[in-house]
Length: 212
Image (cartoon, rainbow, N blue to C red; front, side):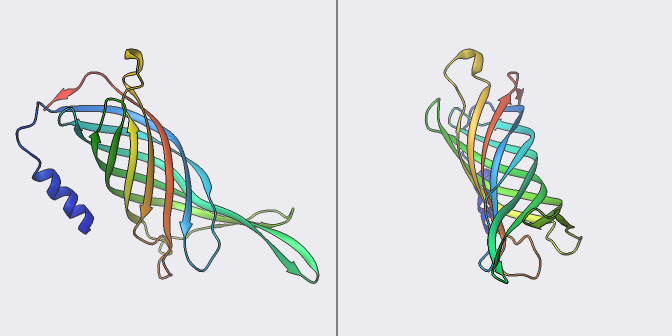
């Protein structure tokens, strides 16, 4: 919560002599690659998707604040080979998690084409499941029961974005690359196990702003 306090303090103390502010809306979606970081068990990258809406407060030509409300799938997957009675068997494991993500990021524009963003992310887990199988056997599916996982996740997001693709007809389309690191555990009463992932998204911001 220290990071959140610092971020909010920054917004409250932002210079008062800024230009007329504009509130913009849009939508975004894309692919993400995630894993669950833990010391004592294997992990691997899992491809997921994310989609949702956004609101952006344009403070001036170089500064803005953007907030997303997105549905996303996260988790991990990996495989390993085990030996039993002089036979080798391949074990497949995959974890799928469903989240509502709410990142609130400060954006700074270096040039018309490039900007950086950073800020806290508040995520809410809707549930998930583990799947595992040996060789060609059927999948064994286990859903996470309520109370075994943390329904709230707090983390930090860092990103790079492009707000202008160089042609006037594409000025409302942007692309972004974000890195998320979770600071709270997913599984309760267990060693450190946090979500980590990268997101590649394409978004669209509607032209007509609401003046503040």
